[in-house]
Image (tube, rainbow, N blue to C red; front, side, top):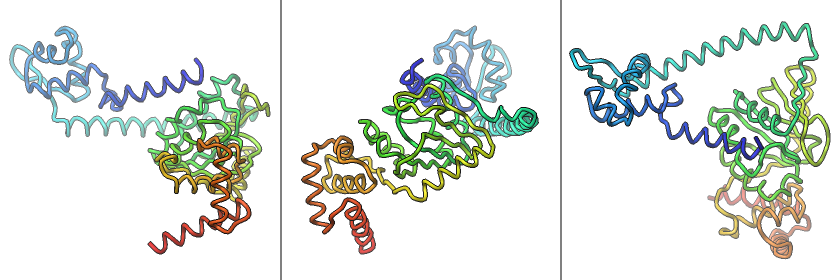
Length: 344
């Protein structure tokens, strides 16, 4: 499976869950269809429910025990067999509470397993390092780390990429919806790729905090417990990666990120409105990208303007801001924006 296919599969899975209201509570599509049909019909016979749910009566008869176990239906006394739906407020709350209990139990089990793993790694410290080979395997592990994140994800973003960056990182977006903080430092050369600006704009709109600076390597750190970084420094592709578990090496990688974060330039690309439709925003983006260290060619490519247009707009901005350098223009533009916000 290619990286693009992997991303597509993840989007299809999310779409499937979105189409099924109760999938997250352990209810299958057929069980949900039957429950919803019963809600519409009211207490009735198996045959009528089966007709509305578009399942056979025999299949529905076999399904009744699982529907009862889920707390979605109850049997009515008498013959023939009739079913009634549990009110959604009662049924869904009960299922959600059950799932929360299961998650809590699983987390408790994870603690036990982690303790066992800790004993094992004490005997074999070499297992603190794990080598992942192949672009597809690296992409899977990258997404898996985001799916497991509970508190914070740190990233140093630099080409080449094992994942398809033209597609949104839905695993990261789901983590941010859970309350996970995401901070990333992008190297300027990352924006040489045509789709990178749109990708970062989407990510920042979802909550990612972005800065830009030259970074020595690609890196992803999750909850200060795991890190993923390239095993080699090839500039063409990522064919092998290293997963680092909790250790002094991981602590050093976190310290590296924090040192780079303190000196990196903030980059605000959270606006979703196309820049071409808003000249004032286009000028702000030009200054922001140039002041962050991105080369003129990359800025023009990301903003969809010609190099000549960029130079003309840049000269106009420099005149307006009485600046001679891009950094000076960026600073004065930020000051002017802050003053405008204070006045308003």
